[in-house]
Image (cartoon, rainbow, N blue to C red; front, side, top):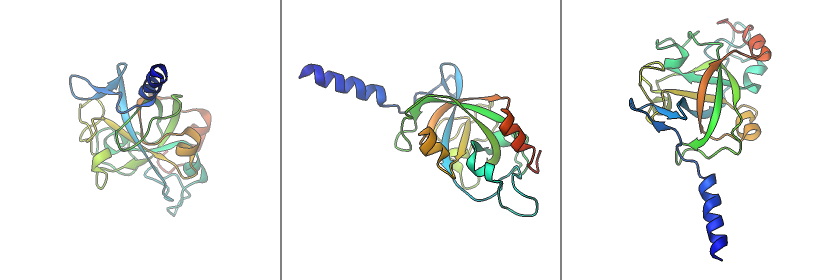
Length: 194
């Protein structure tokens, strides 16, 4: 009986994630030396702040709703500036690697830790999103959101690509800019801000 109880405690301890990214000397969360980001998910029917939809309207291209795309926190979206349209980081790709953690009470541990590449097609503005996207400076400025992350990515989940396919629910990740794979790069060439 003691062995079974110990095994249950051990397994539960391995599944539990909470925030695995820890603050460094400047208060920025890192995991194994890499910068961390908070994530949430969203679903809207707009073309986004990088203009990824047919001209003359606000309808998005289908791929902008169905692919791995993100609305980046405003200070990342515009590389420290205040633009909410055609920010300097429109069209960049970021590799998000789950740490296994999440903000307690606001998400759950992912079932896998496989990295995924997302295309920046939208902005998560500070106004109205202060909790997650309220950083006051770009990455490297040690300005964090209310959960201690320098960057936040709001993941497009229109067809369940994040929650159902990846099984990500407001997870904590490490992040880095990477070159865009061919499909995402080709898609972005259709956007107004290209």
